[in-house]
Length: 288
Image (cartoon, rainbow, N blue to C red; front, top):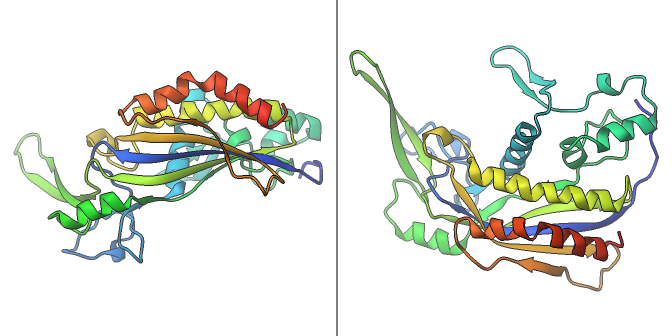
């Protein structure tokens, strides 16, 4: 382990609150045992109490990270799994920091555009906890009522048939894919970005601007599976930026910016265009 400081102080938090609208059918996989209708294998994840599909925070957070790793071109140096299939990702490992003093490790971690936001493994003892928390996102009541009254194939979902076709004989192997229908809204998604006293508040606020870029990358890509076959296009709507300094328990969140326009692109585009102004305002709030 690398020797680091023994304490870290939470200065405050920045909150991004928004809705997520499915532009096309959305599929985030769950357990087949959750809803066994007609022997369907490729099911979506559901709340076990309401049976409504939802977006796990881990799915959105993982997509943000994977696209940010691609955008920054960082080496995929950490093997999550070896063999078939091999699964790799970017990380700072103990081999990377071996022989380095605490100051050098700090410089490496805080200079890494992925790990400084998403954190490092627990065996690297530097004060760099994950700065980004992503909560699960539940289906809005309005969308749930609309789908409940619709004649969908399964409760709240549709069944999409796909097939692999032999290029010579045209023989087909069909398969079923469960999806949440297009135009479904998942409400009050919450991304929480923590500000600590290490390394410095000003730098961490600058890094927060990268999160806006990550959201744009997700809109340009897809969420869930089967994105190359049309599923998973989403839009972030009704974004709000809020902040709270630690210790200000008697105050509500400070609402800084709100995008009212529900157009497919303009919500996030508004936030992107206001990024410099938002960062300047956050510096004032956190005294940086």
